[in-house]
Image 1 (cartoon, rainbow, N blue to C red):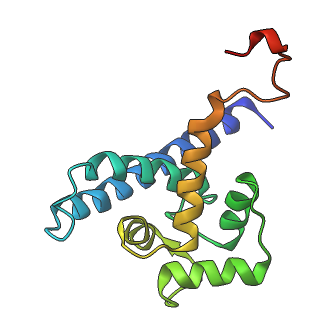
Image 2: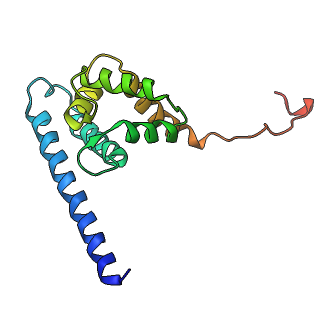
Length: 148
C-alpha cells in the first residue's frame, strides 16, 4: 500500500469524524434550545460529555450505535451481555422503534428521568473513573502501638 493512499484514507476518516461531530453538535444545539431541557444549568457540559462518549462507541462513524458497538462498549466496561440482552437494551433506549441507537435517542435516555440500563452503565463508568485514585492491594501492616 502506498503512502499516498494511506494519507487519503486518513483524510477521509478525519473528514468523516468532523462531519459526525458537526451533526452531533447540531443535535446538541436542538436540545439546548428546547425549553423542556432549558432548566438544566449543566446541560451544555452534560451534552459535551455525552457527545464524547457517543463518538467513542460509534464504530462506523455514521452517527449511530449498533449492536456490535454496544457489545464493545459493555465489554470495555466489564459488563458483557448476550446478543438478546443487547437487543433488549437497544429496544429500551429506542422505545422499540429501531435496532440502532441514534444520538437523539441516546441524549433523551441520558437526560430522561427513567433509569435505563444503558444510562446506569454509563453513570457507573464515570463513577469508576472517579475511584481510580483509591489505592489497591492489601493495606499496610500496622502494629498495636500505631492505634490511637
